[in-house]
Length: 408
Image 1: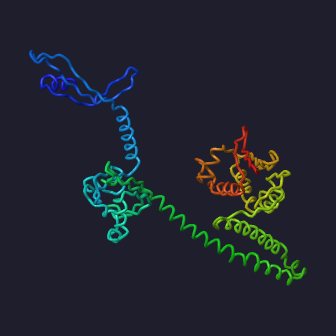
Image 2: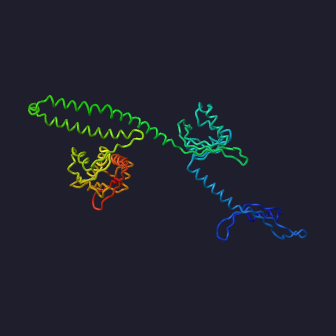
Image 3: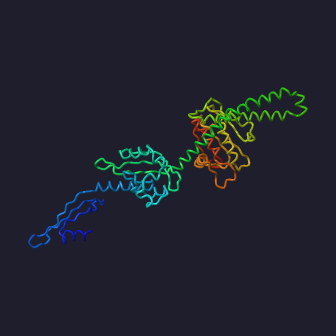
């Protein structure tokens, strides 16, 4: 730089001009647009002095650097492409080329139409699309586009007209993110929700008749037609009792399903009634094989959906017994304070972090010998949150887990 300056101002006797980066006293860089001219003695031609005029460009340079860094960040995380006013590609970054399956050379100078269907390209809607951009208005939307291999890609895209100092649109820049996976997942969820709604209708209406009408009538009619002597002679009492207990169990399960399917409806709300939590939990597990391993102390009353609340807590019961290597397995339910229900067990124990991972991601522990996943735990947490209850998990110092359910 110095050699160039001396050559320009001394040998060529011209004016040297460059933007120079200097360092100030405090160590910071500053930028000056510098003009240097050498002055010579008119008679002897000897160098007499230098004249320098400098304009501070520090703020402008800093803004340029900020813009450059911002654009670099956008280029790294987004697909970026620029079009001229006719829709021809002027520039495409690596991510855009990768997203659409083309090379830079294949895209340069090509028209935007290559990314849309022929029908759309010939439509008034497409014409309006470009007229909107040429008019200086931006467009932001989720758009369906066609890749080189003919497959569909969904983009969250923003088209922004770039306007010059005269207020005229000179080019159009598009910044986009590939959202194909999200769109596919959304469609899959919508399809599954449709199936779920249909299954809910079958459960709520068709199964209701069998479980709550026909089978109870059939058992009642059977009992009326069988005399005590016939029941005793043919030893039918155990069979009738099993039928009745099986029906009661099926009705209890159906009641839970009914409450679950209520939540499928848009803007669904739980139907809450006040219950003594100890009483309904004891009743819920009364027919289970593990009822003797559950210790239920005196519990408070709360506004709950009986079947769903019991289903949620029962999942904690079963997990406490299932993931448990003790010879004497147990789960205890008690009040920690007037507003907190504690579910304690003497199992392997899990931390709050593990509890969140198992319940939210349906994960399994590494080398877990049991077949279960975190699906049931996730349903348990969802039900309790639907009640506006908060749930926390703590691994005990010695053995087991303590789960706190804040009722208020």
